[in-house]
Image (cartoon, rainbow, N blue to C red; front, side, top):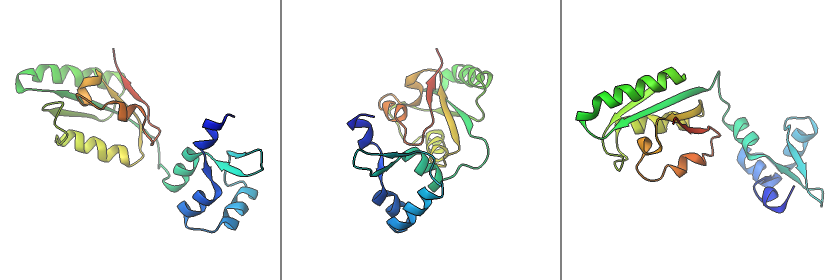
Length: 155
């Protein structure tokens, strides 16, 4: 494991702060096997996988879902919106969220609904037909999601 990977891991103090417990409690949890991915540094300090910690703090209940997002800019393109939604449904997305409006507008009702759903932790994957269907700019934010859901676009 290189230095960059170690920096992405959490320290025992960060874990204690996240759970609101003392460091001794976290050590006891390690001893009892509560954490499956504990890495030791050269100086024998514990480092923890942030994804595992996030899952412990915010457990997902049940199966994670694959969400589709379809958007067109104008009412004249509603047939394209229907085609996008059908393609996402055929891919296995449930639900498919549809929006009508500019890719520059971040206040669309469907986009707001999508963001709320993403923050619940129940989303396993976010799928769009083209990168620019989600937002005109800034889709890179979804490529590097902290919640662990993959972002895909159909070609």
